[in-house]
Length: 274
Ligand code: ARG
Image (cartoon, rainbow, N blue to C red; front, side):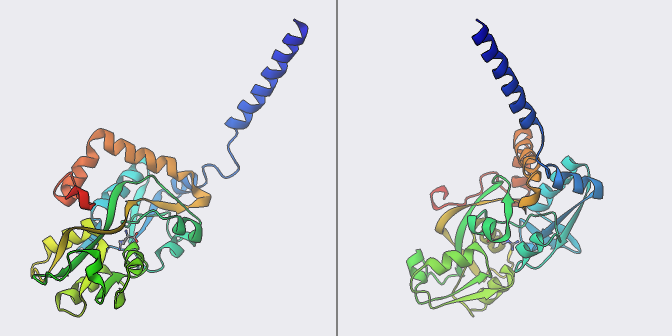
């Protein structure tokens, strides 16, 4: 009995120790949340050229991502400063502390986590790389048809990486922004553009001159998930962001936002969804 009692007591002490350890936060827990709350402002970086995720309405950034950012700022109890920045260099800018997080239609990749020392939120949107071609061209039906063609992409996007994996492309032309690539496609300077399928669909539908169209149902490469990156040292922000995503979905607000910005709650992102 005594031995058993001792064991039990020892176990209790050990358990208490574990509990204390579990309750004691690591030195930098709260780093991001505390810092932002103290500052009273959430600084979000975004390349505001990617409708309907983000684009300028006059001098004001608007879009699906802007509304998500607003919900995160609300959860943190701070004001939102949504800043326009160039896409190329956006991850380095986050790493260097220029922004607290990025919302910019960003695909979650292991490469980005490693290269820039980032942590990503859970996915808030499904995507995949689609193909736009000159209207009525009918020259591209499948990914294989991009062989021998000049393909435009936004630099350092997953669209570029997907195009680089295709065999036989004549040239991959890299643009600072997607709209510049689409303009060149419209005037016939390039044969195709690879970018997020839902974004291409939106741009094609909005373009008044209707000079290009999206190859329906064609998605090249792997399915992609969009997420919200922060510096790994401020990974304490991730549960907060994930909670906002969960809450938006539970409350029905997420469905409202998809309807508001994509015109439907069932955005097609994969060939099978078409
Ligand atoms: N989803 C693609 C990526 O992460 C493209 C994102 C481009 N976003 C933008 N706002 N321009 O590489």
